[in-house]
Image (cartoon, rainbow, N blue to C red; front, side, top):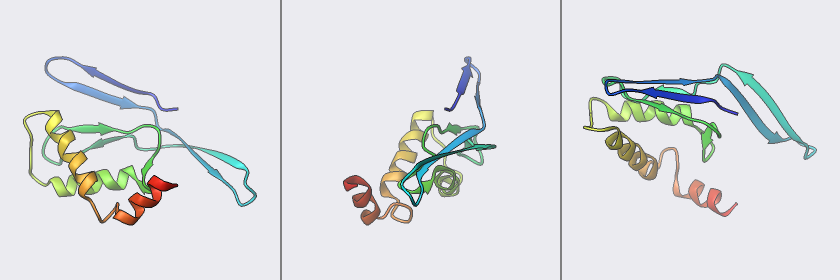
Length: 115
């Protein structure tokens, strides 16, 4: 279970999260296995030039691709672009996810949807 907090005022915001992570899977015999790890990254800076962060919780991947990798590649994709609001960053990130064929080819999307 992830614990995250955001403290805000009119001038700034502070993000915090625990570092525990759980990996669940079925082993070769079909048994449900859970492994616990410490040191997971759950807070990411999505702009190299602006103080904009993103927190993840729950599943550490999207369509089999680690969120950490997707977010870091989005940061490279963003370059020097900036937006007037956090909503602008969110919309651009969503567009990046929808249009990204490198991480999420149509075949992977279809397989995920139908399984």
